[in-house]
Amino acid sequence: MKRLLPLALFAALSAPVCAESDAPVIAELMAGVAELGQVNGVALACGYPELVTKARAMMILRAPKTRRFGEAYETASTEAYTRQGTGGGTCPEAVVLNLKLEMTDLRLKEIAAQAGVQ
Image (tube, rainbow, N blue to C red; front, side, top):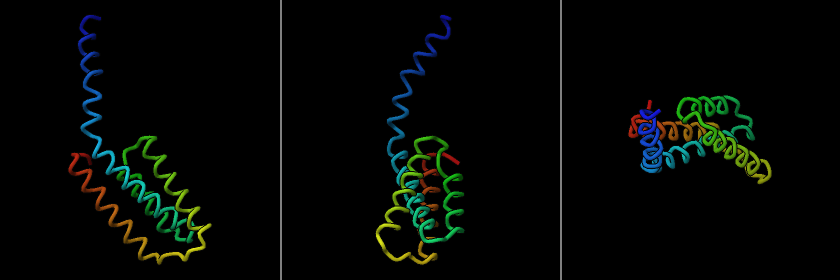
């Protein structure tokens, strides 16, 4: 038990430091996940199933597998879907949404590379 106490204290004290130093990366990842969600919501509302599938695949591939990121994606999707449906706006062309997905994917790859992930 005496051997575990120093290890437990070290782990408890170092966790907030790690979380603080990762804050900018987390914020960038969260913004990218929200973008994926927004495109997904618009694609759902506009009837572009291939883009919905692509956005979901990018989310699974690029985002951390945590509830926080999943909820951010779902919230952004729902808001974009609702806004598109109730706003009465015209749907963007599929090519435009696909370009947004590709740009977001590149940005998420860059963030992951800078953070040393994937």
